[in-house]
Length: 513
Image (cartoon, rainbow, N blue to C red; front, side, top):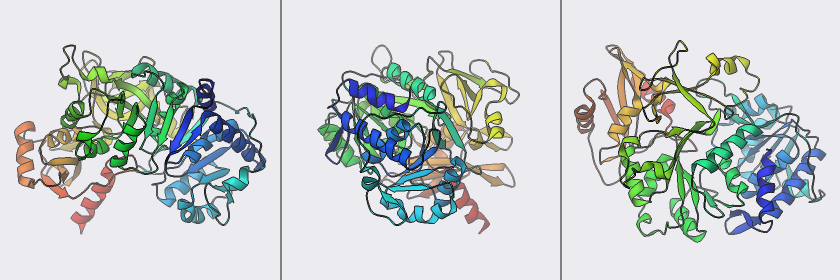
């Protein structure tokens, strides 16, 4: 399936039904189809040919998301740009992808002004909402393009190029195919509850998980309510107003939602599934969410290279048959999905038995077609015939997958392996801790010392000594942080992930200073 097939499927279930809504303005399925035809024709008139790369740089916006389908109609490849990236990283990605066209919101005009002159292959600049020097305004670009059916055939099945973070060097481009997204969509629809015509509230960036979750919604003719900026009070308001059935939030925002004063009076009865993922979640806070938000929490685990649905924990799987909360599996990432093989591998490529810890490896039709123009990285990630996730974990006797750490985040202290996620989960059970991150820092005696950076709940207090003692009682001396820092907030990515690289860099700078 092409990306346009999800839009066309939704239109076949009701062309006048709401498709994309933002700030009270709704585009029907037929309206979005007409926009996609116009955009595809405009791309063709601008010299964009099937297989060419077209990037979108915008915060959440219905017109920007409609452009995704115009790109697909033109047979081109969609390149979502993270608006929170530094200019240099987005310039590197646009250069790596050889993007021929960049569609952007005027809020990013200063960034485009800086990077566009350095990109000779970038021949077309389109501003969605204003007149900007060096770019054509969207309305002018599409004005003479008829809103009648038009479709170019793609040159291959690659439909998306997704940039990975550049924290370990130059960013890479993940080649995702139509078949990858088709499998992801099928797994979503078979793994979670969908009753009636869904209504999906997109608060998180459409450049990430929140965006690809739109495709299964559209396959059922559902409505996507787009939030241009994250605001939890508005999230609750829109959830009630639109009788939202599905939403996605990273754990950090769920923690904030649980602490929000409006949650207790919010009407959540329409909600069928609140997806969470993109980062580990505190089991204590997850149990609180099941009690306060309801039996609707749905976990997903994946990565750009195997989008979203490597394993799932459906709402019903959070509970035992007697209706009690299944606390024993709340720290798991669920079970591998039916079309995905998941195994645990040691450094020599040997698959490990149940219960043993090693790298989580994956294979099946969910896995990417490789890294763009990077055969070395592709070969490294696909050693021994499996995709290597970089996560450390194990499978239990019931085939539940437990992720204990990122391989690069494992701390070796005094000759012992300490998994940062285990220490973080323990700290998060302390009533004063709102969020935390655990890293390893160089240490002359221990090799690495376990270091925790903690954010305290507003109105509560805790000392570093108290938190160290709390951890020692539960995990023992080896895993107890030798250094505890209390910060007012933690640095986070656009999708709410705590940025350990920034924490590590700041603490190292303080130490050397």
